Amino acid sequence: MFKIIGIILSFTFLTVVFPLWCFIQLEHLDWDKLEAKVIAQYDNRAGLRLRAWQNILSDKTLVQDKDKLKKVNRFFNQLQFVSDTTLWGKNDYWATPVEFIGANGGDCEDFSIAKYFSLLAMGVDEKKLRINYVKAISLNQYHMVLTYYATPNAMPLVLDNINGKILPANLRKDLLPIYSFNGDNLWLSKAKGQGKLVGNSNRLSSWNNLRARFNEAKLNKPLYQL
Image (tube, rainbow, N blue to C red; front, side):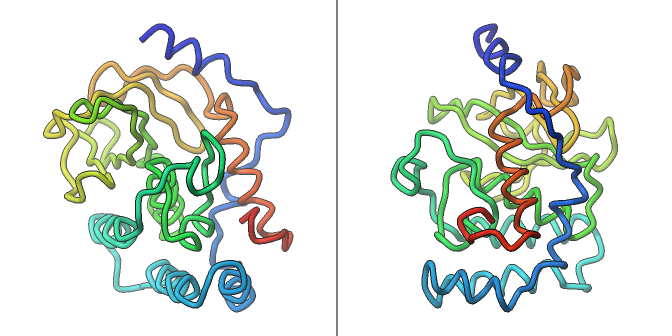
């Protein structure tokens, strides 16, 4: 555990911190242009997946958070699990939602990140969401999930690609929490609750890299940066 904590806290700080508001306003994207890029880089089915995602983000019938959670969790859990080395040729690559949807697959980080950004874009309060780094005990490997806190002290709900059913964290005995983060903060987890606040999430270099690439989407950068 102490080795893991040391790795977390030793991540390189970036000099620029990108505001959360810049990269969650997906409704400002040119969806027609984006669809053309996705189809050109991947295939027509990727374009259909992109439009399905757009429809979810713009679905005004989804008023309650619980309905948004179910819709987003179900949509992204249809995509395939593919390792970073197989898909991107890298040991650890955090894909943006567009990359994840285009490739029709990714690893646990990509599932969690795509759900996180989608729920933010649908109006879920960022303070209610955290991306959690855990150990999947039954698989004996590290894993990432998204959690939702209805209230600050509530037992969080877990959105996971291994178990598609949204369950309270205390019912996920197969997951051992290690740390969690969102757009602002980083917590070390001692139990399946709030955990200990240890600083800003910009300590995570992979998170900052992802945020930078997603922010640049507004500047009409190539698709691989979206």
